Image 1 (cartoon, rainbow, N blue to C red):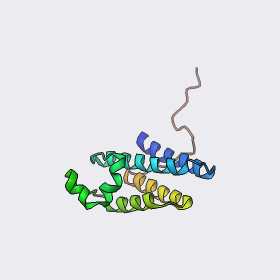
Image 2 (cartoon, rainbow, N blue to C red):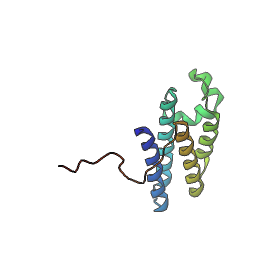
Image 3 (tube, one colour):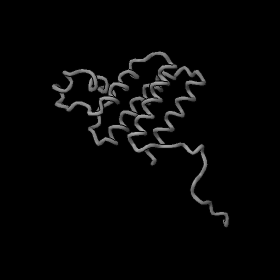
Image 4 (cartoon, rainbow, N blue to C red):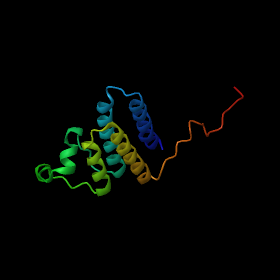
Length: 126
């Protein structure tokens, strides 16, 4: 559950950056893409790929031969992710990132933000 919250929270934070038109939005976007990729690989129990090799891992057939790696199994995620990496329009970047997060959370059996409400009982005797 914690990992799903972290994935959702990263999206929420990136939305704030986008809405504030922060100058470091692109930098943060690409960092969050890399983080999302790592989280999804961990969930899938797939070997972690260094962030500087992710694009080659997903797109360059020579990479597999050079590093003796297996192809990434989730083709739908791969295609969405590569599209997101290539995008340079901020509005489209947000749309693609949100779609990736939705996809990952669905694969992780879903996640629903409760709007910040605590669902565990509160001890008022203290």
